[in-house]
Amino acid sequence: MNTITIPHVSGREALFTDAVPAIALLNNQWRENDYQARVEARLCYSDDALHVGFTVWEDEVFITKFEKNDAVSADSCCEFFFRPDPDADAHYINIEMNAIGTMLAKRNLPGEPFVYLPRSENDAEFAIETTLNAQSWQSYRGPCWQIGYSVPFSIIREFFPGAKLCPGWRMTANFYKCGHKTPRPHYLTWNYIGLGAKGFHAPLFFGEVLFG
Image 1: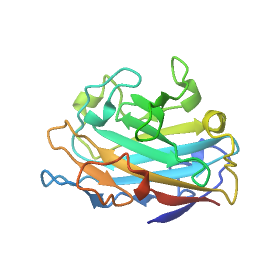
Image 2 (image 1 turned 90 degrees about the vertical axis):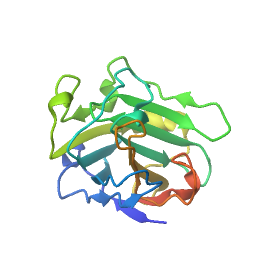
Image 3 (image 1 turned 135 degrees about the horizontal axis):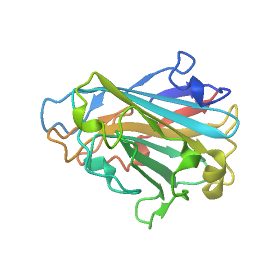
Image 4 (image 1 turned 30 degrees about the vertical axis):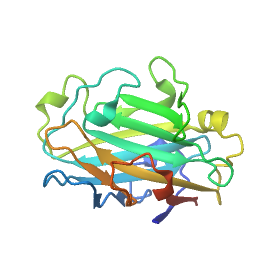
């Protein structure tokens, strides 16, 4: 199990700076071809939110999903799954986002019905930023694209009221890059998933996240 310590920052503007260490997604799982993108995730927190970012180096993107809570894992997609209070609650939040910012966000536990996270019509509370959009992605030819967003603590605590989310707190999580219906399907992870199936939804393989 990998372990990271995430920094406290004054605001989201620190996300893609040297103040927030990059987390490499090095496990290329369930290979169906020789595709190998380079992917770095970043995670930090401020007083009121988690801040999540991905940088992906690849020559093309594949986008078919444009509506809120679409199945974006089919596209060029980055995902962040986390248990905010792992010692008290087995549920986790999964946030999946394609390269143009289409987001799927749920609270989940295998074997139970999922619950969508509350979101405003324009997702303003998540402050989604992307380098590509619905108009520009078709002309993308590299070298890299980025997505960044924030998860308000108020939303996390709505589902996990015991989560402290402050210095010394511990979560578990995993980061992913996928695209299971792209021309070259791929499944990259931060923590290795020891399953024969494509099991991103396997909290057993989450790594440890410590709040610094």
